[in-house]
Image 1 (cartoon, rainbow, N blue to C red):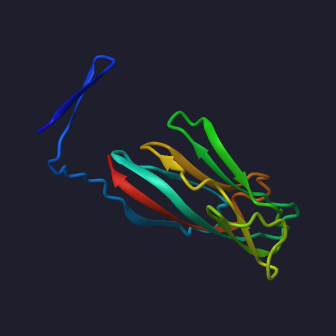
Image 2: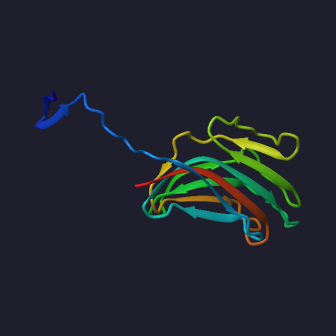
Image 3: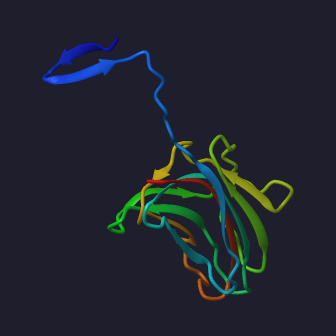
Length: 159
């Protein structure tokens, strides 16, 4: 038998009947492998919410002189920046490097085995519809010429 509880003019009934809870999250790999572009954005589609699990970036730089700074940026639905994480070291010209951004990663400040770098970000990045994940070279050395492949694993659910 339900027991009514009253607090601040709200009534809550507690029951011993089972209550079905549906909160289905599904994994989704989102990739952009277009070359000649080191500035990519991924927008959460309408009626969905994303939790960002990890982001893998492969950056091949041209001979254009300059240090690239790999950056992950979150934007709200008004394009306001709400979070930003930069790799712990820059990448020079004429190199190929791999970056892994994920929760609980070590925050490396040197490339491991000469090509691999890990950078942490918070474990509970939840993004509603119209929010954006931007992956880019924030130094913008050769944005239209460097080749960047991005793969991002998210958990998504309909809202």
